Amino acid sequence: MTTLLDVRDLRVEFRTRDGVAQAVNGVSYGVDAGETLAVLGESGSGKSVTAQAVMGILDTPPGFITGGEVLFRGEDLLTMGREDRRRIRGARMAMIFQDALSSLNPVVPVGAQLGEMFRVHRRMSRRDAKLKAVELMERVRIPAARSRVGDYPHQFSGGMRQRIMIAMALALEPELIIADEPTTALDVTVQAQVMDLLAELQREYGMGLILITHDLGVVADVADRIAVMYAGRVVETAPVHELYKRPAHPYTRGLLDSIPRLDRKGRELSAIRGLPPNLMAVPPGCPFHPRCPRAQDVCRTDRPPLHPVTEPGFPVPADGAGPPGGGRGAEIRAEIPGRASACHFWKDELNA
Figure (cartoon, rainbow, N blue to C red):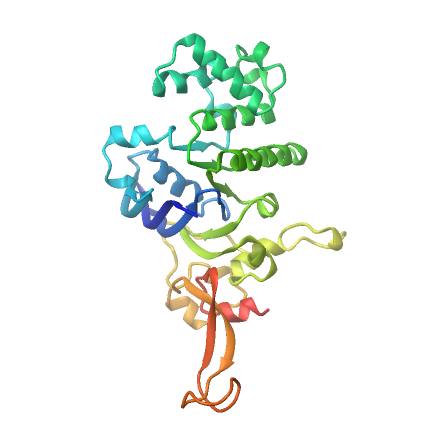
């Protein structure tokens, strides 16, 4: 695979009258061509702010990028000029926003909003841009697209508006799409349709996809890898099936346990106690320790780095001789590809 996006130690703060909020505090993740990365976490964990910083649409002020790199095809977007960044945004990177009704212009027909992408970036005529808009609407399966190209956003259902947002993101066939809560406020059936459509289009165009959500059920069948965020940091990364099978962070386990299950019908739902921290006063040590059932003294004082997650191997004799398992020596641990956890006790959590 070819690396499309490589976010390295990204830091974003919001400067307000009440103080400085560390919204993103050293986030690192990447996505390859044709890969789907799901970014999970509760509201306020920094998922959307990270995406806005990557896209270059962060409101400044009050938001400021204070450190890190955002490499797209090896080029640092944060050091680019405004016009160079603008040429990449939309044409090579696109974003699907979570609230389609507020993201679309309510007084402009959807066809004109779709056609604007071609008029601005491809210098098409109004007629040709309208034809491309109809083609896109048909591509995302909006019924009677030719007759509805002149309709306004409020004349579409929530699911249809989200399809229009997807069509807008796909207009110029970008290499990377960031989908920020694309199924928010949609019923379960429409959620499945939207996710199936995204997966199909991703396979067709071979693009990378970053899927931002708080719903673990949405990403189970579509993601390749998952990055879990808490209090502005990535606290666990893993291939999707590995994470669902054996989480290596107590926060991830709490999220998984809170999913309703058919085999627990009639039982009280599990919940993570407490609330996420105030980003203006993040507690010392591990930011999750006030809510963590495994918290010990070290968690309250030392902030854990993102440890590579390993599996135990064979003991090796001190002199290096003899068959595996014979003699004394340190235990070999094999690193699990793509797995990391920001927990002092990740080994206990992994084997729980």
